[in-house]
Length: 234
Image (cartoon, rainbow, N blue to C red; front, side):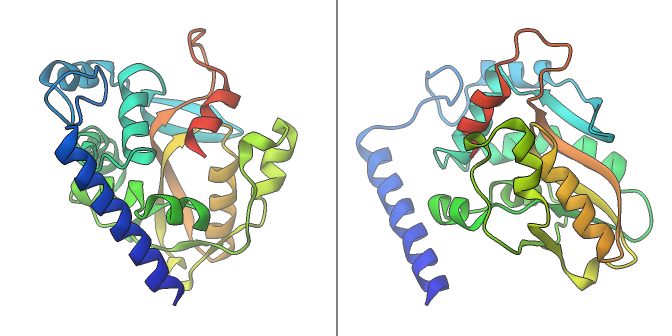
C-alpha cells in the first residue's frame, strides 16, 4: 500500500508538471531564458565552471566537479527541488569523467547515497540515481536508511554528525567489494562519513567519494554559508 501511494503521488506530480508546462513553458534553469531545460550559453558555461578538484573533509578525500554556486547550483536545485529531470543528462556529462576515472579497480561498484523517505515522497524520484543512469553507469542500491533522521539545517553544526550516526545500513551484497560512493552535494561531510561506516561494517571498502558539488567554505570566500546551502538541499 505504501508503494502504491508513493507511485500515485509521483504520477500526480508528473501530471501537474505537464499541465504547468502546457500553459507556461519553463525557461532555462540558470538564466531564465528560452529554451529549456538549459540554453546553449549556460550549458557551455557549466563546463567552464567545472573544477574537477579534491578536498579533504573530516579526513575523507572528496572528488567533486563543481563549487556549489552559480549555474551548477541552479541546475542541481532545478533537478532536486523543481523536478526538472531533463537537466540530469547535462549533469551526467560532467560527472561521468570523475566516475570513469575511479571505477577501474576490480570488484568496484558505484553506490549512491539514497534520499531519505521524506525526500523521496516529496520528489517522487531519486535525483542521483537518474543522473548516474543518464551517465550510462551501473549504480547499486546497497544503502538504506534504517531510522528516521531530522533535517540537518534544524540542528547546530555539532549535532549534525550525531543526527546521521548509525542511520544508514549497507546490504550484504557490498561485502568484499570496492565502493565508489556518490552524493550530489557534500556540505559538512556527515552523511558521507555515516555511509562509509555502514559500508565498512558490512564488509565493503569505500575507495573513493565523488560528488557533483562541494558546498563547504574552503578557499572560496564567495561561497554561501553552509546553513543556507542545507536549507536549499534538505
